[in-house]
Image (cartoon, rainbow, N blue to C red):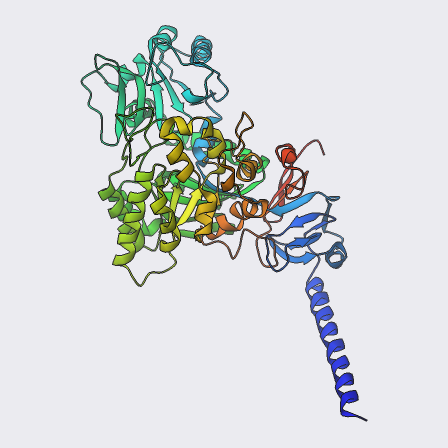
Length: 580
């Protein structure tokens, strides 16, 4: 027998053994027991680079055990297996909300929704109607108004904001607190200001501003740090609640927020400002198995409380991997819509202002040192170009103080308006850009009014410029500032299309692949969770969203019509669209 024949036979034998071992291994895996859930006949975008597309997957417990073709997965089906034949519909890793406010989302469902009001007159009419139903002295709460989205400027107005005469007339005895869509301003009527003890002599607090008329009298609007003057009075009205009543209201807000998220395909939520009290409530809900979403929380407390308590609040994969607390949040500035984003140069439409520094740079530096000492991530809200530069400067300083610490994955929350000189610094420092695509299309109609065309083109929502330098860009909605709906946000990322049909600097659009990663694996990576979330592969959590349409392939203009069919968390169907 020739040597070449021997080689051929041994090679054939080896190949046969390799196939047999692979088959036995697969069969052994299937024989470990039937899957609890099997999804077949789908178009699955796995976000796994080694196996990007599939038809089916199997889940045992809360983990994925196999991904492949429908024929590959059929051996996992047993008598007790739940089989979802999704008949060609689109499945993907569950959307991860990369930056939102869960309790505020829930509370917004318990207040007057002012997001659709087309002008100030309509808001006044809404308040008038609700005052008729309210008890004497009861607070009237609303949220979501934005003066730049109204069809006309109110009259009278200061800096484009309404003054308080009309609201005082319809609600003379009920305090009114209306939160701006950005969360960085509020409107308070005269009764609310009276309860807060605010007069023309009340000074602007650090990091805040009171809008005043020509005589120096408060006109109704309170920006950033000044919001606390009104909220303190509202909080005092809540002091009459028992601890049990307060807890019940917080839980109701959390439940409402979670329900909204799950109905829109969000399986994990990165909460961008949780107090220690909030975390205590989350923890109890997890222990009771009453938190329906996976939550990753940033602590927002003053530095004294932070230093005293941060170590004992650290949680990683608490419960059934439901709750992680390992980040600290601070606010460098406000928002562009309220002229409180901190800019390097004055606003084009308010030349006497460059915005506000909300929490001092010294306070933020000290918080950064507390975070790194305790192995916490650090996340700073920075919208204006000055705020982003100051944040990056602090990060660079702390990194130099701790040269042995690598891959910290510190984040800039929003990174919305950047000076061109600072764009490369994200990748150079290893800082993540935690951005919100829908802010681009929501704010786009008036961004150039605020900062001019040159600054807008060079540094507004510059996703591609950041990614080309090697920075990681992630996505979220900042809910309740925007609807938590990922479909709308995904559409904004790939189109940058404004309401009038124009496109806001189209060269910065994401591809659909980039947009999908920004909403899944990038968000997981930004929370040190890429090993358990963000893609569909064996060993990862079975958090899955199933949509009515393939958002990776359908014509662009059809993306907004895609609907969530199923939301699955840990292998359990937690939302199912009723009209299937």
